[in-house]
Length: 323
Image 1 (cartoon, rainbow, N blue to C red):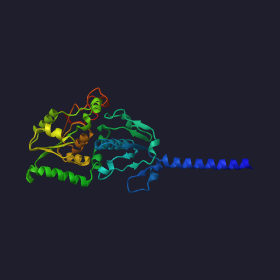
Image 2 (image 1 turned 30 degrees about the horizontal axis):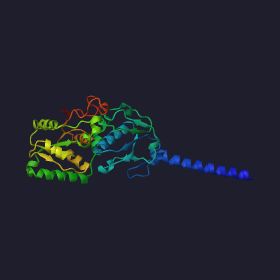
Image 3 (image 1 turned 60 degrees about the horizontal axis):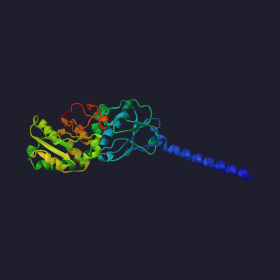
Image 4 (image 1 turned 180 degrees about the horizontal axis):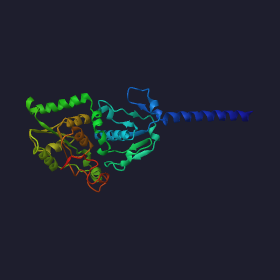
């Protein structure tokens, strides 16, 4: 009798443990555990037979925009649903956050598909036939060039931040020009990235900050081709900029703001001078004018250099001008 009782207890215990495992499997591995960021929350069923591209959105604003643009394009190219594993500010910056599923444990069980190099195009992402976790920085325009028009409609910053940026810029212009003159200025945004790129680790890794003579040459490039120029400088190192950029009434040094506001200010320009970094890259892409960039921003044959093609053609947009 006692033996039969123990057998019954073991059977009950086995059923209970198995049931818990099935419940856990259902809610953490099946794609039903994904939920949508849009207003329609009763749509999980339609995703049960789709492929999913999971990606972690983290880093500064420039990195976030690269990750979103490339992951969005890769997902569309492979007819997949884009899933956000982590969002460190992308949705908060945009007026109309992109339609993405949010991970609720599913993505952690998927195989990882990692890029070969951060800043070079990797063709393997064009032929994905199963749900995957895509890992990497995805910093090549080639991934998303086909969808550029769509992305320009998606990457729209929040209206209150746009208004703040316009107000700050208008105040600075108003200190120099009357209301009529302001209308005829050609604005050149200049993003000067220094900061941590001067630290020993980043120098050894292969980053090169733009020297003062590059800035002077870039300004001359525009001065030789356009009239009524105003240069608008955005930088985290104002002292260096003010010490090294020729002083005149047509140079505006913007005070440091929130990263999104700084980005918007640069996109209000007609043209762009880049130094190094993804922040300046996206400011130039969104501005869509004439862009001059520092051609020696990577030290060849370093770890960072190995992440690029020697001519940087996968990273630098065609038509941008090296100096």
